[in-house]
Length: 586
Image (cartoon, rainbow, N blue to C red; front, side):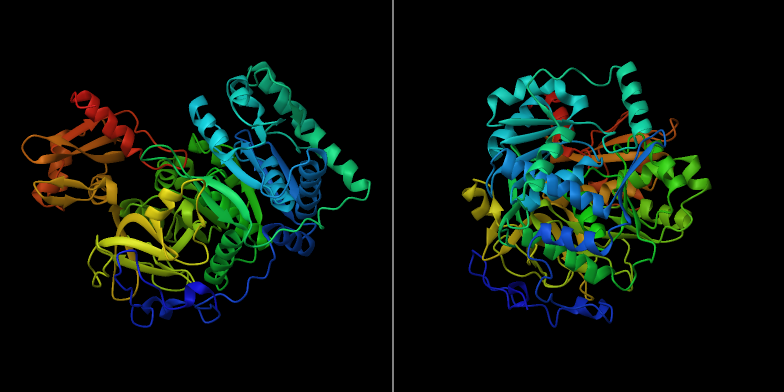
């Protein structure tokens, strides 16, 4: 039994967390599911890769599907061999040591698992960087982490001269989205990119991914081995940078044990419902913890993971849905909404899709209802954070799916709802969600102050306002810092967004609080219309049917688009900044 299964300790305030009576959610676990994890079956993440690769050697592991329908595939054995070579390149060619940081800035493609698995085998620490980051954002991630190697997609190589000289990066590796495609397909993709001038000239010394792999292969051929590199569950696997919604992003320190634990927790939840044909689509970016975690889960289970380099526009997913028998799909609210707005998806939804997992941000009830109508099964909403590797809770696949709920905690996971002083809240009452389990990070990289603020005795304070019902199902009310205070009354943007999203003339919505002389703060809604005839009065009349008066948006702004993160979360901080500038209060 893991530490997380023991009786929880005290908070920093001294208030004791008494376990909820018999963990009420356990009654919804399947017959084969454990309430607490046994000892982990892998010594390290690299060991998991090795075992899965040997068991499923000739099966397809990863496929990249481009918007044109052009594809490239690697088997489990190929992924294992290539990641061994990359590990050897890092350790024996570059001389990196265990714990050295290596960064990747790339969309979903076949190079991603080679880099990630190779870094894990080498005992290096993976640093994921959003390929769309601006130069200052790249600077922060590289300099904060101290990364010595940067693998960059060739399409963004023009940023390298601005970031490399200011960092500790010693080696740049360049790769293409078409790397590891069959020769003819690779040639065609690169020719099209060249004609469209999609790949800028690389102005810094760089090694191609194929050159790096060739150098690694020479070391292995000379008798060196990556199997002799000692890596344990307690070693760092990744510095996963948070979204930075309140200032500079922080690097969550995730260990091999954190990721392996979450993979086992997910399997514990999925095992009774896994389809025999394990074909998953990963449209969300792998540099985000949600997609990264899902990819790891399916690799460990011998699944075939179909990678989408970019889900925008959502028509990019159409060739993959047509070519592959997708059984498992993970996404976020905006992605589900986008698919439901496409005629081709509504008219011919994936015929054998069995499991859809929603995460990253709240899945709105209106979206979930439309998805069930079109696809024929519910969205199993889950909840997690960068700091929890990522999974904390999910709706059980073999139990009731409760609309609006993030489900029940994973095995060996404790969840509590507390007030501002750390005292447990009664069932049904909102408070801050705190989490303890083997998937919770070690802390924030070089930020002991932030670690102390967010963690105490293994408990992670999520910053999310939530509540729990009598069955042990949890519900996210909103982010603590996003709450709007109207004349002393709490208004949670998620609730207002969910109501507005139910209007048939609304495509997307984001809600924030703005300063107001009369009420302190007022509710402002930014709306993208699906029907241009919809008016502000239409939206307010619709809201009044479901919301008390102080929750109805006082201000409504129609927009062509709403700023979103790469995984589809509404960037409320950007909307608030825009509003403050408009009101002269920036």
